[in-house]
Length: 279
Image (tube, rainbow, N blue to C red; front, top):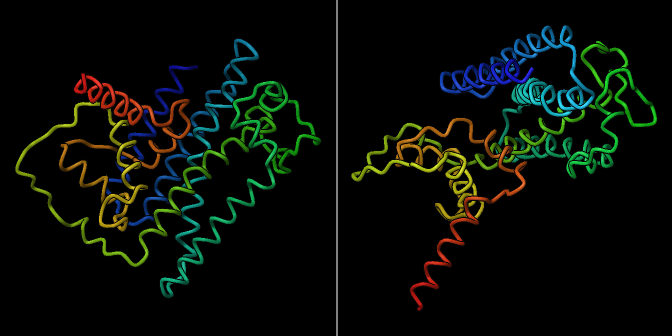
C-alpha cells in the first residue's frame, strides 16, 4: 500500500507543480488542479477498495492520514475555484470584506467541530477505532450527514473531517495572501533578477521556506508590504533554487513536531559562536 500511495502522491505533486508553472490565474489553476486531484483520488479509491488491510492499525493510518491528504487537495482547490468565481469586481474594500467572510467560514467550521479539532491537533488516538475504521458510524460522534450516503468501502465517519481541516489550513494561507495582495503593485513578477554574485542554496528547501516565512511575518521587507510570493521569487532567483509550492510546504512545516527547526538551529549555532568569541 505504501509504495502505491507514495507513487500516487509524487504523480499528483508533479502535475500540480506543472499546472502552477503554466497558469498564472488563480481560477484556472484551481480548476485544473481540482480535476487532477479528483482523478488521482479516483485512482486511489479503485486500488483501495480491492486492497485488504493487514491490520486495524493500517486501516486507521490510511483513513486518518493518507486518504485525507489526497481528499484535502480536492476540497481545497474546489474552495479556491468557488471563491474566485464569486470574487466581486468592486473596489479594494469590497474584495477585502469578501475574503474576510471566507475566513469567517473557516472559523465557524472550527467552532462547530471544536472537540474533533482538539482530538486531531493533539494527535490523540483513543477514538481512532471509531473515527477511522469502516462500518463504525456513530451519530453521537458528530458525523456529517452525507457520510451515510458515501461509499462504505472507502469512507469512515471522520476521514472527511480530517481532510477538511487540512484543506482549511491551506485555505487560510491562501486567503491571507490574497488579502495581503490588495492594493499592492505586483509588477515584480515581470522583473528579472540579476545578482552579480552567484550563491546557491545548499541547505534543504524546507529550511529556506521556514526562513522566508519568518522574515515575511516579521515584516522585514519593504516595511512589511512585500508579498510572500514576491519574497519567495526573489530568494529563488538569488539562491538559484526552485522552492515549489511554498504554501503546501508551510502547512507541512506547521504540522511538524519542531515547527521552527532551522531557525532554532541558527540561533543555537550563533549563540555558541558568540560565546566562543567571548572566551
